Image (cartoon, rainbow, N blue to C red; front, side):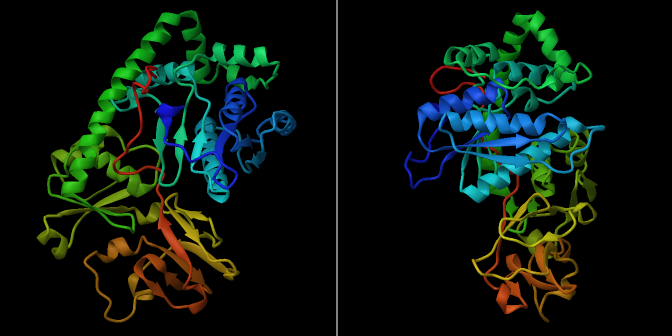
Length: 416
C-alpha cells in the first residue's frame, strides 16, 4: 500500500480510510485485508435496491463486517429503475452516494475493489467502442476528485486470488446474479476472457503501456494549462485563440460541464481545427470579452445554462450541478432556502457592479434563493440576507482540467 500513498496517519483522532463494499468477494476481501493493514477504516455498503433480496444481502454484509470488527454504514439508493442505461445510472448514483458519505465522515481516501480481471474487461469494452488512447489506459490505481482519492489496490490481482484469500479465512460472500446476465456486454466479455486467459493478460499489459503514456500526457497538459489558460473559481475556463489541443479542450469541457466523460473526440477536434462558438457536452465555448482578450485569452468555456441541474434544498454538504458543494456554519437556518443557478446578473448584483468576466459566465454561478429571490451569491462575494453571510460554496468538480491519476506501473513492480 505504500506505493499508493501518502495516507493519513492511522490513529483514533484521524480520518478513517473508506472502503466501498458491495458484499461480493472482491470488496469483502478488500475490507478484510484493509482492516489488517490499519485500524482506522470504515466500510460503506451500498444497496442499489434493484432486487428483492438486495436489502437482506446488504444487512448480511453489514453483519459480516461487524463480525470482522469493521465499522460500517449502509447507503440505500432510492429511485433507481430498471430500463435503458441501468448500469451507468447505477454507477453514477453509487458514486454520488459514496462521495456524499465520505464528505460527511471526513474521509479523504476511498478504497475500491476493482481487480485485474475487471481491468481486462474494461480494456476490451473500450477497444470495441473505439476509445481513444486515454480510455485504453483503463482504470487508474489512483484517481482523484476535488476532495477524494479513489484507490484501487487490487488492479494487479486476479479475482480467483481474492476468492482464495476469503476461503482461507473462512469468509463467505454474496453472489449477485446480475453479474452473470449475458444481456450485459461486460458479462459477455467476462465469459470470453475466461475462455482465453492470454487475451486477458495481453489486455493488462496493453493498459500498462497506455497508462504510462497517459500520465506523460497529463503532465504536459497541466503545464500547458498553467502557462496559457485561466481557471476561475466560478467553474469556467478562459483559453487562448488556438484552444491549445483537442485533448485539453475535451478535459476543459468535461470539467466545466461536471460530466463524467468528455464530449465526442471528433466534435472536439473539429472545434480546435476551426474555433467557433459552440455548445458541446453540457458546456459552451463563447468569445471572451475585451479585458480577457487583452490578456491573450480569446475563448471562454462556460456551463451550458439549459443543462444545469434544478435547484436543490440548501443544507450543509449539499451538492448542486455535480460541481458545487455548500457548507453552512452550525446554527445557520436554511429553512425555505434553495441552492441553484444565480441567473440574470441584474437580479442579484448591486448597481454599478463590474467584472472582467462576462454576464454569460456569472449567470451560471451557484446561489442561495429564498422567497423567489436571490439571497446570496457567495462566489461573487454578494449576500443580501445577513443570516446567510456565513454560508460558503466551493467548486468541487468530479474531474479536474489537469488530471493526476496513477496508471500503468505501480511503484514496487506491479502493473495494471
